[in-house]
Image (cartoon, rainbow, N blue to C red; front, top):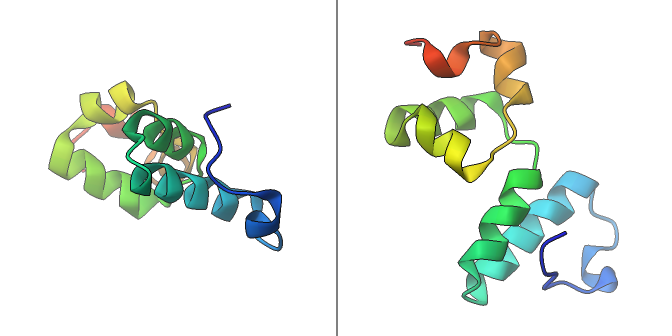
Amino acid sequence: MPKSYLSEAEKAGMSENCAILAESVAAGKAGDEEAAWQWLALAELPAHSLLSAKKRNGADWIRAKGLRTDTAEKAYGKDWLDRNI
Protein backbone atom coordinates (compact mmCIF):
# COMPACT_ATOMS: atom_id res chain seq x y z
CA MET A 1 0.00 0.00 0.00
CA PRO A 2 1.15 3.55 -0.68
CA LYS A 3 2.06 5.85 2.17
CA SER A 4 -1.07 7.03 3.98
CA TYR A 5 -1.64 10.71 4.62
CA LEU A 6 -5.02 10.41 6.35
CA SER A 7 -5.86 9.11 9.79
CA GLU A 8 -8.50 6.47 10.32
CA ALA A 9 -10.67 9.18 11.89
CA GLU A 10 -10.41 11.30 8.74
CA LYS A 11 -11.49 8.32 6.62
CA ALA A 12 -14.32 7.30 8.96
CA GLY A 13 -17.65 7.10 7.19
CA MET A 14 -16.13 7.13 3.70
CA SER A 15 -16.61 4.29 1.25
CA GLU A 16 -13.43 2.43 0.41
CA ASN A 17 -13.22 4.08 -3.00
CA CYS A 18 -13.79 7.54 -1.54
CA ALA A 19 -11.05 6.94 1.05
CA ILE A 20 -8.65 5.87 -1.70
CA LEU A 21 -9.40 9.02 -3.67
CA ALA A 22 -9.04 11.16 -0.55
CA GLU A 23 -5.65 9.54 0.12
CA SER A 24 -4.59 10.38 -3.44
CA VAL A 25 -5.58 14.02 -3.00
CA ALA A 26 -3.88 14.24 0.40
CA ALA A 27 -0.66 12.74 -0.99
CA GLY A 28 -0.73 15.25 -3.84
CA LYS A 29 -1.23 18.15 -1.43
CA ALA A 30 1.74 16.86 0.59
CA GLY A 31 3.84 16.92 -2.58
CA ASP A 32 4.15 13.14 -2.79
CA GLU A 33 3.22 12.63 -6.44
CA GLU A 34 4.36 9.02 -6.44
CA ALA A 35 1.98 8.08 -3.62
CA ALA A 36 -0.80 10.18 -5.17
CA TRP A 37 -0.58 8.16 -8.40
CA GLN A 38 -0.25 4.89 -6.49
CA TRP A 39 -3.44 5.66 -4.57
CA LEU A 40 -5.24 6.73 -7.75
CA ALA A 41 -4.27 3.45 -9.41
CA LEU A 42 -6.19 1.63 -6.65
CA ALA A 43 -9.39 3.64 -7.20
CA GLU A 44 -12.39 2.60 -9.24
CA LEU A 45 -12.66 5.44 -11.73
CA PRO A 46 -15.80 6.14 -13.77
CA ALA A 47 -15.71 4.88 -17.36
CA HIS A 48 -16.27 8.36 -18.78
CA SER A 49 -13.31 9.71 -16.80
CA LEU A 50 -11.05 6.99 -18.16
CA LEU A 51 -12.25 7.66 -21.70
CA SER A 52 -11.54 11.35 -21.25
CA ALA A 53 -8.06 10.54 -19.93
CA LYS A 54 -7.45 8.31 -22.95
CA LYS A 55 -8.50 11.07 -25.36
CA ARG A 56 -6.31 13.62 -23.58
CA ASN A 57 -3.23 11.54 -22.74
CA GLY A 58 -3.46 8.33 -24.78
CA ALA A 59 -3.87 4.67 -23.98
CA ASP A 60 -0.21 4.17 -23.12
CA TRP A 61 -0.45 6.85 -20.44
CA ILE A 62 -3.31 4.96 -18.76
CA ARG A 63 -1.29 1.76 -18.91
CA ALA A 64 1.85 3.47 -17.58
CA LYS A 65 -0.05 4.94 -14.64
CA GLY A 66 -1.51 1.51 -13.87
CA LEU A 67 -5.06 2.82 -13.65
CA ARG A 68 -7.84 0.30 -13.14
CA THR A 69 -9.90 0.06 -16.31
CA ASP A 70 -12.62 -2.40 -15.33
CA THR A 71 -15.40 0.20 -15.45
CA ALA A 72 -14.38 1.29 -18.95
CA GLU A 73 -14.08 -2.32 -20.08
CA LYS A 74 -17.68 -2.92 -18.97
CA ALA A 75 -18.90 0.20 -20.73
CA TYR A 76 -16.83 0.13 -23.93
CA GLY A 77 -15.54 -3.45 -24.28
CA LYS A 78 -12.31 -5.18 -23.29
CA ASP A 79 -10.38 -3.64 -26.19
CA TRP A 80 -11.48 -0.04 -25.60
CA LEU A 81 -7.92 1.20 -25.06
CA ASP A 82 -6.89 0.01 -28.50
CA ARG A 83 -9.93 1.26 -30.43
CA ASN A 84 -11.06 4.71 -31.49
CA ILE A 85 -14.11 5.55 -29.42
